[in-house]
Image (cartoon, rainbow, N blue to C red; front, side):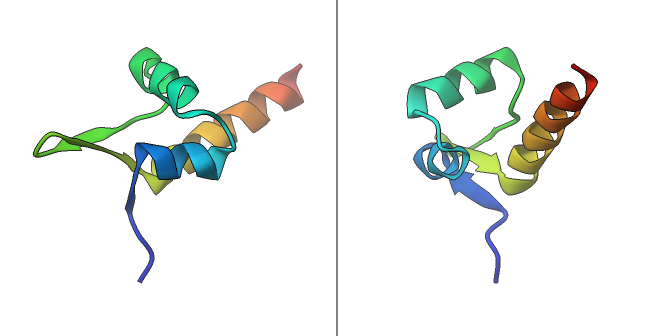
Length: 61
């Protein structure tokens, strides 16, 4: 079964960025996250959406 949510460190690793950079993206609203009983999780779909937006911006430039 594929995971729907990943931890912040896992998400940062998947994006090949630092954990602090991912927190910046979360705080700015660029990447969506959820809290479950005090634990921050990032939907894998939010990572895909973020990558899609970056790709579209690159194509438009």
